Image (tube, rainbow, N blue to C red; front, side):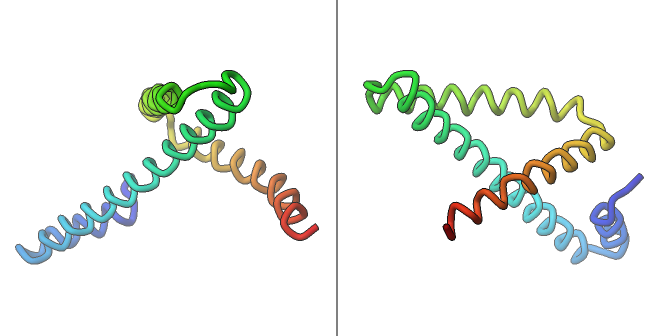
Length: 118
């Protein structure tokens, strides 16, 4: 069960040395895109929880050092949770996650748009 990208890579690799370089560059680009997305999500969650929840609700008088420390702990915990969840997620589970995500987005978008324009 191969994806289109894997099939493309296997086809290119069978042709010669230049194609192997193209496969290597495409693989690097793919990994960079995944890392960029994951980094942005981790940073956003850590920032939201640190500033809005920790500093805003739990400890309003928290220093900047405490807030940053809390954000680092959140980042490490989120990374560990994602690694564990990623190792046990099947393609059927992933499809269900996409359905849930789309359902949440469909409920958030109207409120977001009304907040922007009303």
